[in-house]
Length: 296
Image (cartoon, rainbow, N blue to C red):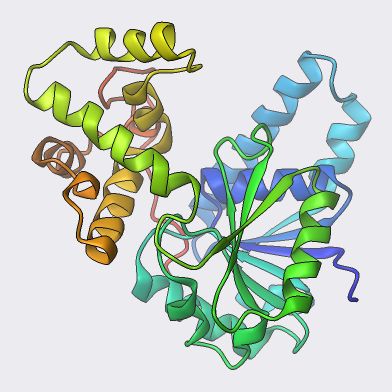
């Protein structure tokens, strides 16, 4: 079985940078791609801040942090990913953008390379169809913040090969992650269960049923959750939550997945949660979000 030591990540947003950091801390080399230099600069700053926090907590030495940074190479040239054997796409939840990325990667990387998507909801089979290596395409769904959250979902599509699954389980173990397998259906395991819960909380706010604080405190104090559903929605990103809800509702045609009108209007207004500085709660001002890895 191929030993996967060279990783590439397409998309240098919060998720992509977190995946790159996790792989680099595990001793792997990482190429992190964006077509525009500005998101790459923000990615460098995000990685530096994350490593500085870990050093300050005594879980990493200054030398280890410096070595981690050296293992990451930021690039605006997709051809720089050619030598990777594990390629993880982490661009926005838009099937056309993702299919274009997969099609271009299929022509660049070697025949044994795995093409993986961090999508939360888009069917992997649709992405695999844009390539000539459907047996080497799968989902590898991380959770935010990637360096902290231990779970990763391996999404096995109809054509995903057994060797691909075995390599992904070994890769997840090398990253220190706990892998679970799921079939290729929208939402996979976690979001299939989580999204109706979050949408119900948004509807409660929309209908004036209870305040945001009481909804969140109810679930924290009553169910022992580490954070309430509205705080969690803000952390995920309301635009991401909206896109997942649309995908789930389209696939299963069940009303519990449909984004409430309030969520649609918050996204339209740019109230995206923690990353924009304003969602259901207010946060410290954040820089304007840059587009993530739209194929150039």
